[in-house]
Image 1 (cartoon, one colour):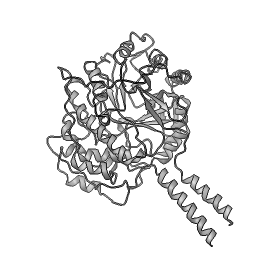
Image 2: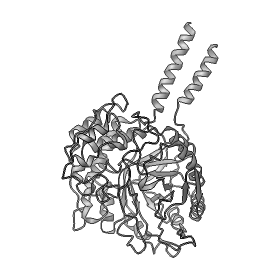
Image 3: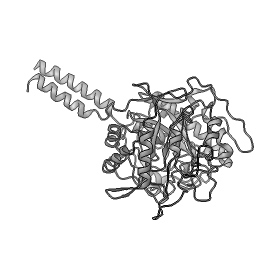
Image 4: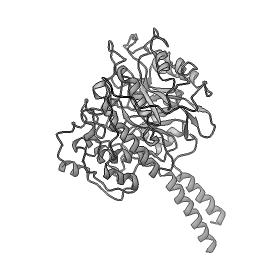
Length: 500
């Protein structure tokens, strides 16, 4: 092998080692909108919420390559550019699925909490501990190097009624801590936000609370609303109340989008399938709403027993519905919508809302001392979905791993640790449908859609996501490390070849 053959062979290995390509440029936040960092075009989220298996799933949807290969062609065919994933296993490997998504031009919004590791609605202060933060930091590590990660959600519908509004205090603290972690441990500052239930009594206070304050590190980078008020062909921009949302959020200071939408309390087809016209898409992607909203994600891709699914999955086969075809056509038209469209280039920082009869918030608590070590030195070994619950340890819960780089050099027997942990009676039960901030009730016929919104119910999710697991190996995308290692190998090999 001559030098040029060796160099060509090494460069081929380098290309293989590069896990993620550059087909989806990083997105940037400018004012209250997202922008493509390369083309400088405004980015509107045209998406769907993606969690095949739903609340009973024991599978991380981004760790099963066969399922990604099955579903991504349908996602691409829908004319989407973003998916939201509600739960992942941070010890699994996600390289292939994330590469498949990027090749399809699809970004990912990722919830960091899991059914066993989240802020509790029953006792938020007790659940905000080092165990919880280590878990979400390890999930950040698992995805921070993928170029097509649009952002992280620090929580989903944790406050779903006025009486638990104060839980947002600890969610915002976790959001602050996540931004600090990214600043110290990531090559780029990926945006971090919150996905809110659309509760009429606290709608504005909750939104303002996440965007307010003088401390930029504690402010959300974006805000998602789970809104289902536009129902069926009889609704409209005014009937749904979308016109009022535009007035209420006219001066909102950060990007705002619908993290869930797509009412299914509509007329039914002969087989019982909801006839969802998705007429709200026409309004969302128009100058009626674009000055405030940056698109949204339809709930949801696959049918999980709640009549929201666009497709039905049976093993390796996917059956599309009339609703799939309708959304495909609507999103095809929405893809033509472009331009800055009156976004707020220089928004003013919002004032934090005062407490009243419906809204309660408190000063953000300091980061737990042990969690500060993770922020400074790294989250250490990821423990995955089988880790003991943060809600069984109280506010002084001690993390199960040491701070340090995200690696598999230290093995932790999470089952053995779980057996030695004694539950704290002041904390909620793991996975409780009333305790976990991941859980929310989907609207049903006759419900008041202004009071609570749909969400991903993880109350019955199994603790172990076995599919795609690499037995404790890190799931972070090693594209920078691999590329760096490969370049070094090429150079050292070339030098050795010349010398020899």
